[in-house]
Length: 295
Image (cartoon, rainbow, N blue to C red; front, side, top):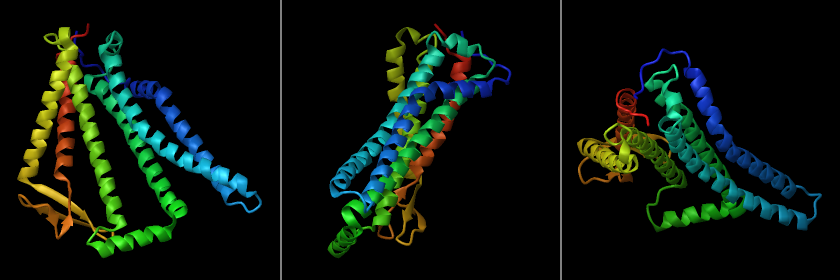
């Protein structure tokens, strides 16, 4: 049995059902994050009050520091919880016994796959945003209020005296770049997983679907990496975050690593992965529509 083209009309309902199914567990982490921020805020109010005894203030400070650490951990775990449901729900709703129901819905294969991408892509973006905002805010708060701005400035001055080190702003920019690149790679990883699971359920491979999905995954991942490396060899487009918070762009020649004596952030691999993700979407949708054999 293969997926067939269906008239439009139920796509919004499909989006709604996918969202509700995923929100049952993922939302619990957001609730936990809100509670931790509430504890953080209450402890800040207690710590800033002049009418409360020192013993209570010290306890509130300890609880505040714990809430900071837990908030960062929870926001980080949120990314992996979302990823688990990205893969688990895709398999369960399309290739378990529930798949018969999914493929009989009045939606096309593009819409079946698109619903998963939109809902879980949205959750992943939200999870990343929650992690980034939580981490940046709490780390900045820790630097200013716990460590102290004076100590941070002293460390920056010492680093400047020791050599041509990047500024704190540049370091943060590079960290953000690394996180964004990780997110792009993460999306590609998910698209490869979707493709591998789908290919493993064609008639010729479904008897050994688990082994087939693993083999297809590694072959596809290697192809992704090879194409991204080849594109980087052709044109290595980079950007540099300057001290005045502006961006500079350039193209690195072979064996070059610096742009104007500054470390550049490679952009080509990110565009390569995103382009391949789009190709993988339509390839996966086509196989779902024409080749998948439901058990």
